[in-house]
View 1 (cartoon, rainbow, N blue to C red):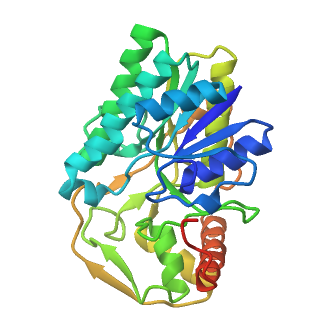
View 2: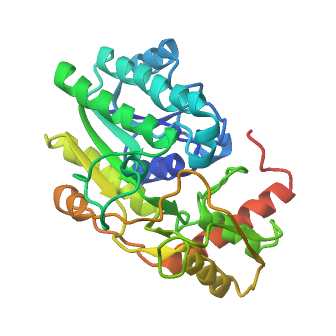
Length: 335
C-alpha cells in the first residue's frame, strides 16, 4: 500500500512523511513547491512536483504508484490573506481539493484524510469547542476548508470514500530529532515569528490586537506540537484500515495560551528580551478558540507526547537557528 501525501514538502506534510517512514510505510509526495521545499523530502521518497488539482497528473500518480490512501495537506493557510484574496483560496483549497477527491474516487483510493482547521468554527460560543459546535467560519480560509469537508461527506455517501477530517488548532514546534520544521519564508505562525525575533532575524514581534475580551487582552489559542499532529494522522490511517467509521476530530491539547504567554515563553527559552510592538486587530481572528480533544483521544487512541509550551518553543527556536544557518550557507533554496 502506498500513501500519497499532498503538500508533503511543506511544514506539516514533511513531518507526516517522517512519521510514515518511521512506521514502515511507503509515502509518495506531491507538492507544487509554492511554500514547500524539495530538500524537506527525505532521500528515497518518490517526489512529484505539481498541483493536487491537476487531475491528469494525480490520476497518473495513483495508477503508477498503486496509491491506496491519500493524506491531503496541500493548500493555502493564511487567514488574513484569505480576506483580501478570497478567490485564490477557493481555488487552492476548494476547487483543487474537489479535483483530488474526484481522482481518489475514480482511482479506487480506499482512505482519505483531510487537513482541516479550527477556523470552520468561527467565533465559538463556548470553549473548549467540540466537533458538534455550529460551523460558522468568518474567513474565506475557514469557508474554503469547510466546503472540502462537505465534499468528502457527500463523496462518502455517493461513492463510499472512507475518510477522516482532522481540524487543527495552532500547529507549532519541530521534529524532536531535528529533521524538519517550519521553513516557509512567509510564515505567519506566532511561535515561529517569536523564534525569528529572538534570533534577530526580524527586528521585532508584532501583536495584532490587545483589546480582546481575554485576561491579558490578546488572543487565546491552543498550540499543538507538529509531531503530535502527525501522530494523530497516523492513528487516523490505522483507524480506517481497521474498518473504522468516518470521523471528524479536533486536534489540540485543550489548553489555552495567550499571545503574550507565547512571547514570554520564547523570551525565557531563548534568553533574549526581544522587542514587541502592538498593532490593530487583524480581520478573521477570533478572540479565543481552544480544542476539546475527547473524540480524538477516545476514537483514535491518540495521546500527546509534547504537550509543553516551553518544549515547543525550544524546538521552534532550534529549528529556526538551523534553518537560518542553512540559508546563510546558500542551501536554503527550493532545490
